[in-house]
Image (cartoon, rainbow, N blue to C red; front, side, top):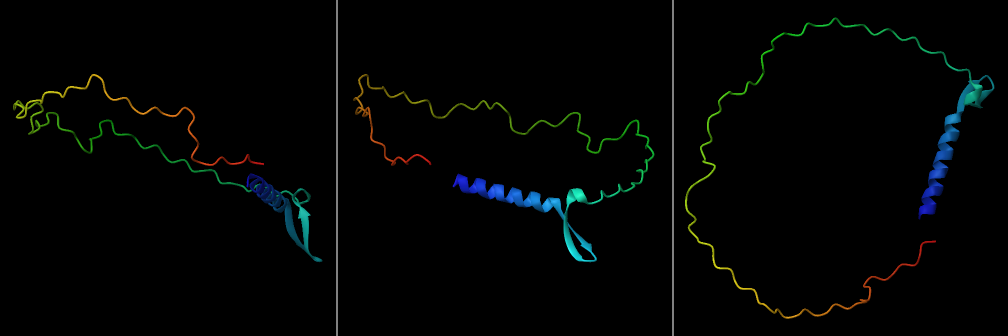
Length: 120
């Protein structure tokens, strides 16, 4: 699979390079393919200078669009309520001192998935 992808990529690159190097020129005898190196280089287009915009003065003290209040109102819910807990904590259950041992795990388990032959 990887070999096919590499071959396809090489073919695409070869075709794209070949098509980039050839130009079709129409002459009196019909269309003629020439290499890009044989054609006359095109002249550089003249560009206009970009106009400069005048600098606008920045305001010295701009007004904020959304002022924040200096003293916000307190939240209606208290952060630390003092109500006692209605349910007391239950007593913890004692843990057994000698639990039953688990079944031993095999040292060399058989694999469940079949192994694949090495990639050629």
